[in-house]
Length: 108
Image (cartoon, rainbow, N blue to C red; front, side, top):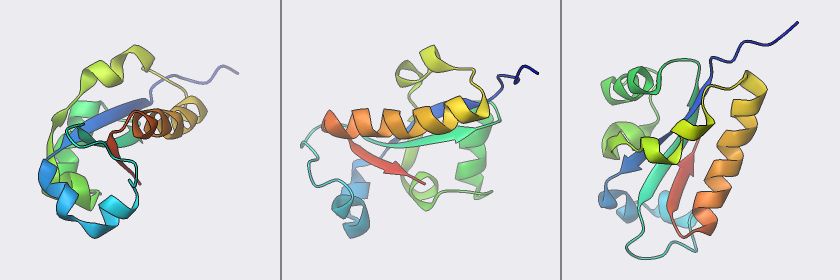
């Protein structure tokens, strides 16, 4: 049985105000000043719909709800769509890659 590829990884740009949050900063000890701060997630929905739900407080990550500015499709569209297992794995890998690149990254 072939698994349906309808999952997506997505990246949300966060406001620089998130840098004032101690928990966020503890998770990003190697953050390079000036680099973007982002949230990396995965969803079975269209990323635009998922972002809107975050902002509306529906199954929202608190950092996205409070600091989310916009989706950053140039960081994720080349990977989508994915199976659940692919998305789950890629969400972690993408977060690691961005963090190693100096980004401030939050993942749920």
